Length: 266
Image (cartoon, rainbow, N blue to C red; front, side, top):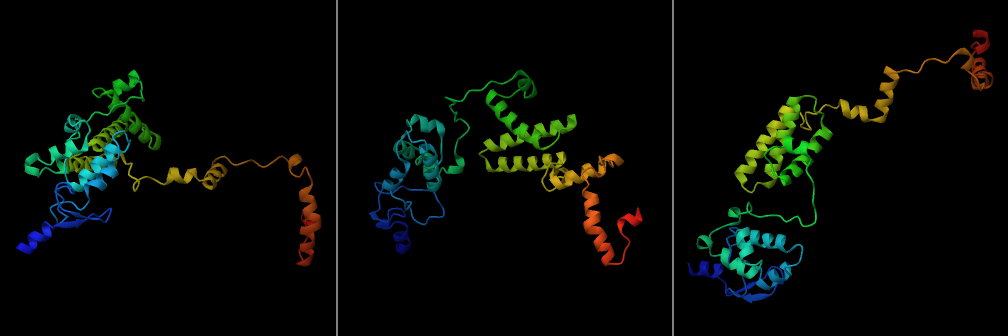
């Protein structure tokens, strides 16, 4: 029992990044909920984590905070992040105490996070508002993008087809923003069924349109459906090429093989 406790709480532990053996304490390492790590403290020292996060004004700061939280299996809670003034130390101390330290990254709260569009602005047309009635401007902008991608690749020949493509766009948007594993799985399942109903799965898509886009197949289609008519007699050998070939090539080969020359046939 004592041996197991020593393995779980070693006196010194080597950081997996800087490779330095640090004395284990709350000053050097963070406690964690990662079930794949067999020690009480995560083997990445606080110094290396701080260096990796960098300054607050770094554009990758928040994404790196979330990455470290995933390693520690601690939750990302947007409102608490704001209350902590985006300070990593204050934030991680608070979330490490939630639910007696057992709250995990899967219990993160992303839904209250507000994305600030300080530079990008856009206007939603009235037709789009009517088509996507009940959705916010940000949602309509995303839905229009998803829907246009669908209509560009697949024809919307009827109202039913258009409705299915619309439902696919809505389901895709919801899946893109889902943070719940079960909800995401259900949405992907629904998306697959809708795509099957609309017959737009890549495995079901007909090769007809693809083959027509091939240049050779396109030429053959023109030749079959719109053949070029035979020229009038006066235009058949304007530059005398046929006469030249008959005289200096075809007739010589005809004599070589004991055949009648072209003149005798005409």
